Length: 99
Image (cartoon, rainbow, N blue to C red; front, top):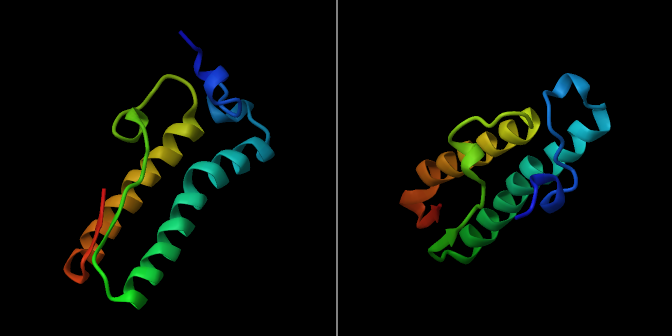
């Protein structure tokens, strides 16, 4: 059995008041911004090609419920779920599904 910190070296227990700004930025860049920019690029390509397509985003249980500690991780995973739902609603009629 692995501890979360072993699987995700950037994960740190505790609330974010103990974090340095650089740690928050890394978590945000990794878990939120990368997903957003990847989806943005994929949607542009799919629309240019005029094809139907599927986008599959991977979040975690943290996207639907809170976890003890790791507040920034939980926040960014909630954001991934929000992005996914927004894309699904916004582009379904244009043939792009997002899960």
